[in-house]
Amino acid sequence: MMSSHGEMSLNKIGPAANEETDKNNINQSDADHPSSSGFCGHFLSFFSFLLILLTFPVSVWGCMKIVQEYERAVIFRLGRLLGGAKGPGLFWINPCVDTFRKVDLRTVSFDIPPQEVLTKDSVTILVDAVVYYRIFNPTVSITKVENANQATQMLAQTTLRNMLGTKSLADILKDREEMSEQMEAVLYAASKNWGIKVERVELKDVKLPPSLQRAMAAEAEATREARAKVIAAEGEMNASRALKEAANVMSESPSALQLRYMQTLTEIASEKNSTVVFPVPVDLISHFMRR
Image (cartoon, rainbow, N blue to C red; front, top):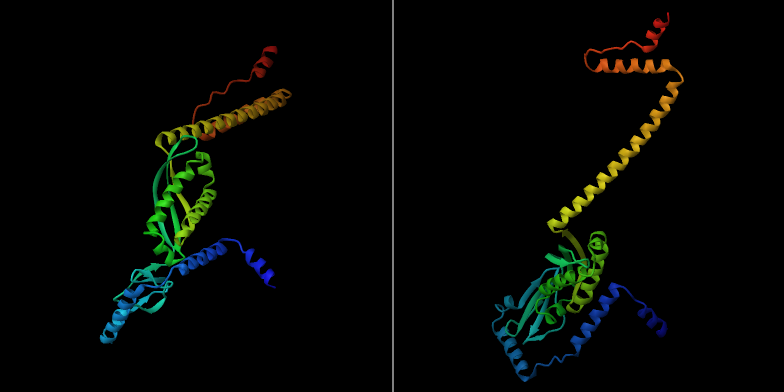
């Protein structure tokens, strides 16, 4: 039973299992630190407790602290970490020897400023993005990095530049979703040691240089003109074939040509009032000449 349970625990994969492993490792590393503060620390703690008792109940207002549902408090006693994060709700501190810092656990978003990137095919572009992240371990985000938010923003900027530098312009314009997923994985692998989970990365806009925009517009216009000329030529060819077939039919009956001529005159007269010169058919003149 023990071996099977161990195998099942080893089979846990995915981001949730990685995050749980990271928390266990962090908690284990925190537990390895000695919690003794020495004689001076014990003396100051005893003196502070005595001061709180002497000033009771006024001192209660300085000892009682409240954090919201989405916040946690990391407490330090004489500069040393005191257990894990506290909250949400009510907790107590010793105002003489304890300090604490609040950490917001909600998802935070920030815009990456437009980065000028040289692509793999030597095209200079401006790319900006947005990153969504949250803090999943408040203790580590305070103790392992000076400013977790600023560090994540700087890491996102450098990661965006490095990743886009290995892609061509066509790949950047075509595979935005794939690049966002790759960037998210890279950012999480680097920021999980700071207690930060990068949840989503989105490329907002890719700005091309004006000269490249004009060149691409000229290329697209030339392509459309070439396609229009091909379509017009195909139409002329089909029309000529139809006219040839009509001429062959009319050649079998000369009167059909006269009827078509009369129909054309009727169409012209119906559009505008105009004078129409109607020539006498040559066949009629030749008939009178013979008589």
